[in-house]
Image (cartoon, rainbow, N blue to C red; front, side, top):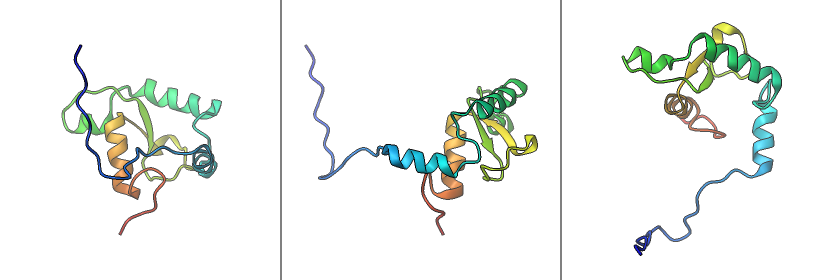
Length: 108
């Protein structure tokens, strides 16, 4: 039976995992928590109206949108004109470019 080769990592390496307190703090900053019924309805409407990733479509790719992004980065602004459908890779890239990644402050 094949054996998986050992993984060599730097001393003290640990995968990043948010604690429940960090998740609660992040959700508290949002105007609508992502698990609220109202946000799920808003998300469903945006994804039903535009099922393809807007960023990928601009680049000529066809990829299904799975997440809804706030264009201006303000979680409290849930206006229809401020929401855009994105795929997970595009949303992650946009978030990382805007504020240095999830839960981190802006970088200079």
